[in-house]
Image 1 (cartoon, rainbow, N blue to C red):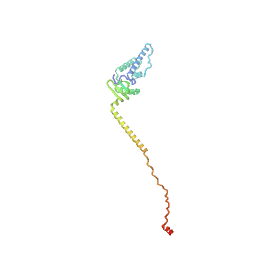
Image 2: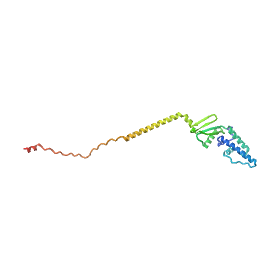
Image 3: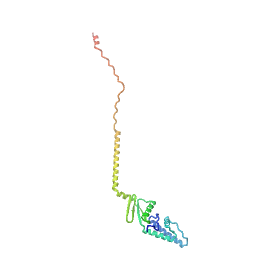
Image 4: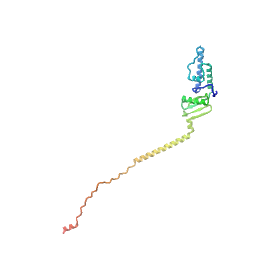
Length: 217
């Protein structure tokens, strides 16, 4: 299936082999429907079809009422189913349709115009994805990153533990100092000097000895 100037266009809504299978079955049902109308002499008209088949016909300028166009599309889908490369993506959670189509658009622009995706879920990878081709595996998951950097992670956790221990010790010392300050006894107040004047009582003088002598004489 040549990729340069491809004859057919595979709509981006056709993601994997399951979508190709659905288109093939719908084309077969359309073929039976138109054959029955032709056999009964009824005018040929298209029944209600899926948007996927309408996109396939539109992008390949095919008239589904024309047998040759239907045959071309059927042969194209068969070739895609048998020969298109398939890449398997594993995600931790179901990716959105917009994300899937963005990835598929890039792959069909850079690798193959007819590449198909197979999407799987693998919760153990935590985040990121694992890409598998027929001969290679590209593990871009968070689990693989942590495995590859296990020692770096262990060192970071060890350093974080040391920092937490230092912070806890600093808080403990600060609490001890705070408690010591609040429980330290206050010094006794000094007695205040009295400002009232001190009164000293007068002592009477003793009588002189001459007086006693005169009385005696």
